[in-house]
Amino acid sequence: MTRFVLDTSITAAWLLPNEDHDLALAVQESLLTSQAIVPPIWWFEICNLLVTCERRKRHTPAITQTILDALYDHPILVDDDIDPADMLRLSRAHGLTVYDASYLEIARRNAVPLATLDRRLAQVAAAETIPLFAS
Image (cartoon, rainbow, N blue to C red):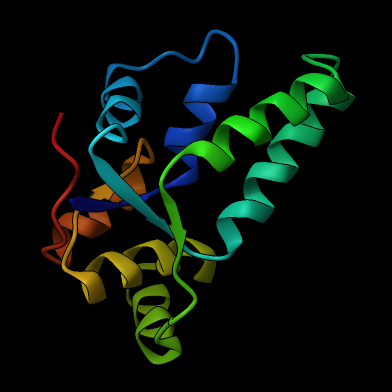
């Protein structure tokens, strides 16, 4: 089974109305035969996104629960074996948040591509010779 690191920007494109993106759809389809790896912060980011949508009346708590149930059914592995020193190095070297650096650290350590729609994160991945998910 192939694996890749799943950034929140991709997941957001699945969840938000009018946020369709070809790469996000390709990543979602790949989960039929692949496994996504995420840092622990991913669930916090997803839940924050969902509750923000509720507050903005983009959807209801019932829809949030349906989305969570669907995400639980995806092959998503939370990787909590983070290397803090590498996260800090990436953050300092590239002016990233530690949260964003965690996605890169996981991709590097597991030698897997990063799936992201975040241009800055993609640029840093390229600079660090971390491959990007190719659709």
